[in-house]
Length: 246
Length: 138
Ligand code: SF4
Ligand code: FES
Image (cartoon, rainbow over all chains, first blue to last red; front, side, top):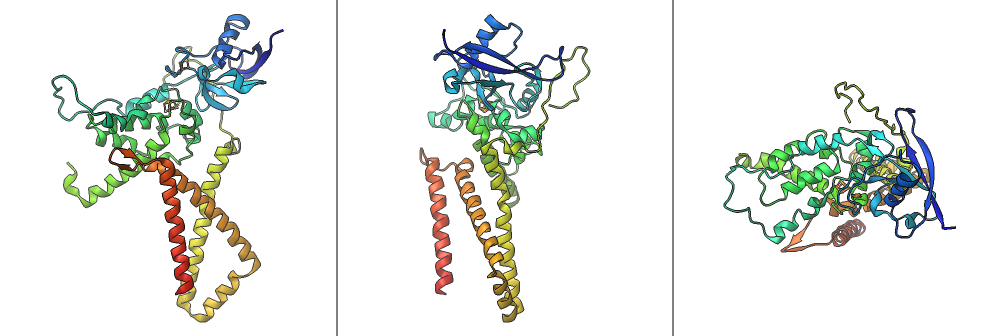
């Protein structure tokens, strides 16, 4: 008999109960399988009612985030082998409302993302002939922030967001900073006004877990701390050199 | 997620898991974070003791020797040791976070995080030694 491993999946089916319950499934233990493969096996072979999100199964789309043994991870990038011999606890991402089983509600982030205006802002919108030019080293200034796949693992790891859901949060701030640092952008002032509001960067107490769990090495914690420094410098500059406030 | 969405018929009944009061005990990293925040009390207590020193100096020799006597009781020594350990923990954890707030570039080369931490620590140790040396020799 081939070896099996047990998955304890936290399920929520609102039409049946308002409580979440753990349900155990035994799946084949295969070295090349990730958690997502095991969930797909459950869905295909054992229980078609299990709900979860996924798309690319290669760490690009950001839709398969969930808690595995208490840590937020991409289920398509976490091998069963890491958790051998199990059982493995699978839960929906923390800090988000659960719609069903492992599916969480993300529209809060979508609204926040829009607030930081993650696009190029130009003062005079006269599109150049061709394209805006940029050197490789200017690209390096923001490249790691642009790698974000909106997987929400950082929000799940952030206790500040859990306790204070109005907090703008790691990924939204990192994406704001991504455009601030882009040499083609001129919207830093507009964006920083949003980022340094009450719900913005100053809510962050630097727990640092957002950067630890990020699968794309975006380092949102660093984005937030650097924004704290640069907005503070700007604040003092506006007193000392008022002629620069145009 | 704000609760103020308009009523939609058949709106999904979301499940919200409340955050327990002792959320920070659940993970080692959270405990370390809470410790870092709490040890700031030790930093404050050292500042207070310093203020009392200044006050005693202003009040005269009698007040100062009363204070030093108070500070050399066993209880005070134990409290000071705890405060010193807390203060070291606080400083070291904060210095280790310095690269998060600081990117230093020399030309195209970005100074690696470990080096920033190391330079901060060295500066801290060096300044402490200078102050200690001044206190002993002057
Ligand atoms: S910053 Fe990292 S953890 Fe957060 S959403 Fe983006 S990719 Fe995911
Ligand atoms: S399925 Fe796309 S990131 Fe995991």
